[in-house]
Length: 240
Image (cartoon, rainbow, N blue to C red; front, side, top):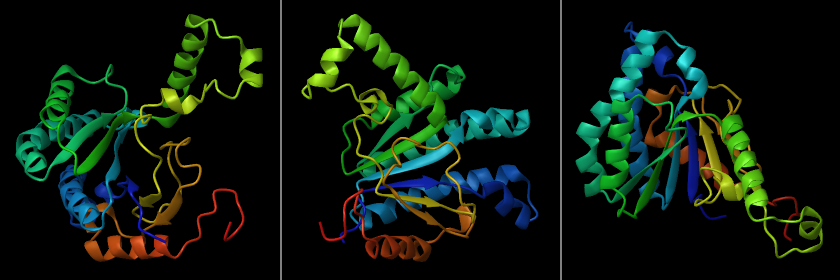
């Protein structure tokens, strides 16, 4: 099997890593953001074209306000420090999630990152911030319903006409990208935590015991090799 072209990452364990270093949880979030650049470079080395990084969920707003504020400040820091690097490495930054709930300063930084890297095309960095897969599906269902009403589509006709495509996937945030081939979650937790519930239908799952800041190229290569040994049948039979 060839290698994956799209890898999704649940970057888990930043806070626990910081506590292991006898440092505040904030320190782990900063180390976790820095790790993204390394992982993007590893992906490019292995001919991976898309990386989906789960950075901040809608549920994460429930964390202590001081921790949330620090994570928001990291977006501004990332923008100032990494924009030139993204462009030098021909990496396109794309935000995935609900922009409406973001503070103006955070939204401005994300918008600049998207605008200033929009012509890059060697690697797509999909940054999931203020993202919830259930909320994404609710939004897609609403958009699909609005589309049906606006275009006066007869649902009975849809059932008998295979040329009419009303797939929910057309209204997801990720509609312009293929589904992930491989999901890597660090920290040893074995769940997907409301991440890409629709898109992960046939994705290979890999759970790495190392915490995200401890995740090395060796661990990354081990995940790739595990993927290459698997037989992806997408519901079919082996060899079909």
